[in-house]
Image (cartoon, rainbow, N blue to C red; front, side, top):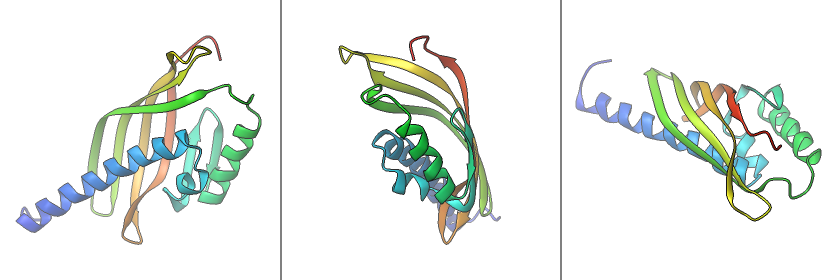
Length: 147
Protein backbone atom coordinates (compact mmCIF):
# COMPACT_ATOMS: atom_id res chain seq x y z
CA UNK A 1 0.00 0.00 0.00
CA UNK A 2 1.33 3.41 -0.86
CA UNK A 3 1.61 6.14 1.70
CA UNK A 4 -0.80 8.45 -0.13
CA UNK A 5 -3.27 10.60 1.73
CA UNK A 6 -6.07 8.35 0.51
CA UNK A 7 -4.39 5.19 1.84
CA UNK A 8 -3.62 6.85 5.20
CA UNK A 9 -7.23 8.00 5.58
CA UNK A 10 -8.50 4.50 4.65
CA UNK A 11 -6.20 2.99 7.30
CA UNK A 12 -7.57 5.35 9.96
CA UNK A 13 -11.16 4.62 8.91
CA UNK A 14 -10.50 0.86 9.06
CA UNK A 15 -8.96 1.09 12.52
CA UNK A 16 -11.87 3.19 13.77
CA UNK A 17 -14.44 0.76 12.33
CA UNK A 18 -12.64 -2.14 14.01
CA UNK A 19 -12.63 -0.24 17.34
CA UNK A 20 -16.37 0.32 16.91
CA UNK A 21 -16.80 -3.42 16.25
CA UNK A 22 -14.91 -4.32 19.44
CA UNK A 23 -17.08 -1.94 21.48
CA UNK A 24 -20.33 -3.05 19.79
CA UNK A 25 -19.51 -6.61 20.86
CA UNK A 26 -19.55 -5.63 24.55
CA UNK A 27 -22.67 -3.50 24.25
CA UNK A 28 -24.65 -6.21 22.46
CA UNK A 29 -23.55 -8.88 24.93
CA UNK A 30 -24.30 -6.71 27.98
CA UNK A 31 -27.78 -5.89 26.70
CA UNK A 32 -28.25 -9.50 25.57
CA UNK A 33 -29.08 -8.37 22.05
CA UNK A 34 -28.04 -11.70 20.60
CA UNK A 35 -29.26 -10.86 17.09
CA UNK A 36 -26.99 -7.81 16.92
CA UNK A 37 -24.20 -9.73 18.66
CA UNK A 38 -24.25 -12.65 16.22
CA UNK A 39 -24.17 -10.31 13.21
CA UNK A 40 -20.76 -9.00 14.31
CA UNK A 41 -19.27 -12.28 13.06
CA UNK A 42 -18.41 -13.23 9.49
CA UNK A 43 -20.55 -15.84 7.74
CA UNK A 44 -18.10 -18.54 8.86
CA UNK A 45 -16.93 -16.61 11.94
CA UNK A 46 -15.84 -18.47 15.04
CA UNK A 47 -16.07 -17.72 18.77
CA UNK A 48 -14.06 -19.59 21.43
CA UNK A 49 -14.04 -18.95 25.16
CA UNK A 50 -15.37 -19.97 28.54
CA UNK A 51 -18.86 -20.72 27.21
CA UNK A 52 -17.53 -23.09 24.57
CA UNK A 53 -17.04 -22.60 20.88
CA UNK A 54 -19.26 -22.09 17.87
CA UNK A 55 -18.98 -21.21 14.20
CA UNK A 56 -21.36 -19.08 12.10
CA UNK A 57 -23.58 -16.32 13.46
CA UNK A 58 -26.54 -18.70 13.93
CA UNK A 59 -24.50 -21.22 15.96
CA UNK A 60 -22.91 -18.46 18.04
CA UNK A 61 -26.35 -17.04 18.85
CA UNK A 62 -27.67 -20.51 19.77
CA UNK A 63 -24.66 -21.13 22.04
CA UNK A 64 -25.33 -17.90 23.94
CA UNK A 65 -29.09 -18.50 24.15
CA UNK A 66 -28.38 -21.87 25.74
CA UNK A 67 -25.83 -20.39 28.16
CA UNK A 68 -28.11 -17.55 29.25
CA UNK A 69 -31.09 -19.91 29.64
CA UNK A 70 -29.05 -21.98 32.09
CA UNK A 71 -28.15 -19.03 34.33
CA UNK A 72 -30.00 -18.19 37.52
CA UNK A 73 -32.27 -15.19 36.80
CA UNK A 74 -30.78 -12.01 38.22
CA UNK A 75 -27.38 -13.66 38.79
CA UNK A 76 -25.51 -10.92 36.94
CA UNK A 77 -27.03 -7.52 37.62
CA UNK A 78 -26.28 -4.66 35.24
CA UNK A 79 -23.35 -6.28 33.39
CA UNK A 80 -20.70 -4.11 31.75
CA UNK A 81 -17.81 -5.10 29.53
CA UNK A 82 -14.94 -2.66 29.96
CA UNK A 83 -12.55 -2.99 27.05
CA UNK A 84 -9.19 -1.36 26.54
CA UNK A 85 -5.67 -1.57 25.13
CA UNK A 86 -6.75 -2.05 21.53
CA UNK A 87 -3.83 -3.17 19.36
CA UNK A 88 -5.01 -3.40 15.75
CA UNK A 89 -2.82 -4.50 12.83
CA UNK A 90 -4.23 -4.14 9.31
CA UNK A 91 -3.33 -6.26 6.30
CA UNK A 92 -5.59 -5.29 3.40
CA UNK A 93 -9.02 -6.84 3.97
CA UNK A 94 -7.87 -8.76 7.05
CA UNK A 95 -6.62 -7.63 10.42
CA UNK A 96 -5.68 -8.85 13.86
CA UNK A 97 -6.61 -7.22 17.14
CA UNK A 98 -5.61 -7.83 20.72
CA UNK A 99 -7.39 -6.15 23.58
CA UNK A 100 -8.05 -6.40 27.32
CA UNK A 101 -11.45 -6.82 28.98
CA UNK A 102 -13.05 -6.73 32.38
CA UNK A 103 -16.55 -7.96 33.07
CA UNK A 104 -18.18 -5.91 35.81
CA UNK A 105 -21.60 -6.54 37.35
CA UNK A 106 -23.50 -5.34 40.39
CA UNK A 107 -23.48 -7.49 43.50
CA UNK A 108 -26.56 -7.98 45.70
CA UNK A 109 -26.26 -4.36 46.86
CA UNK A 110 -25.58 -3.22 43.28
CA UNK A 111 -21.95 -2.37 44.07
CA UNK A 112 -19.69 -2.90 41.06
CA UNK A 113 -17.73 -6.14 41.18
CA UNK A 114 -15.16 -7.33 38.66
CA UNK A 115 -16.23 -10.90 37.95
CA UNK A 116 -13.69 -11.76 35.28
CA UNK A 117 -10.86 -10.19 33.33
CA UNK A 118 -8.72 -11.28 30.44
CA UNK A 119 -7.86 -10.67 26.84
CA UNK A 120 -9.35 -11.06 23.37
CA UNK A 121 -7.34 -12.41 20.46
CA UNK A 122 -9.09 -11.55 17.19
CA UNK A 123 -8.79 -12.23 13.50
CA UNK A 124 -10.97 -9.90 11.46
CA UNK A 125 -12.12 -9.77 7.88
CA UNK A 126 -13.79 -7.16 5.71
CA UNK A 127 -16.94 -8.91 4.47
CA UNK A 128 -19.46 -7.15 2.25
CA UNK A 129 -17.68 -3.86 2.96
CA UNK A 130 -17.87 -4.18 6.79
CA UNK A 131 -15.36 -5.44 9.32
CA UNK A 132 -16.45 -8.64 11.11
CA UNK A 133 -14.92 -11.15 13.49
CA UNK A 134 -13.44 -14.09 11.62
CA UNK A 135 -12.20 -15.61 14.87
CA UNK A 136 -12.63 -14.29 18.38
CA UNK A 137 -10.92 -16.01 21.29
CA UNK A 138 -11.77 -14.85 24.81
CA UNK A 139 -9.12 -15.81 27.35
CA UNK A 140 -10.07 -15.47 31.02
CA UNK A 141 -7.03 -14.65 33.14
CA UNK A 142 -8.72 -13.58 36.40
CA UNK A 143 -11.99 -14.78 37.90
CA UNK A 144 -13.83 -13.83 41.08
CA UNK A 145 -14.39 -16.65 43.54
CA UNK A 146 -18.11 -15.93 43.98
CA UNK A 147 -19.71 -16.96 40.70
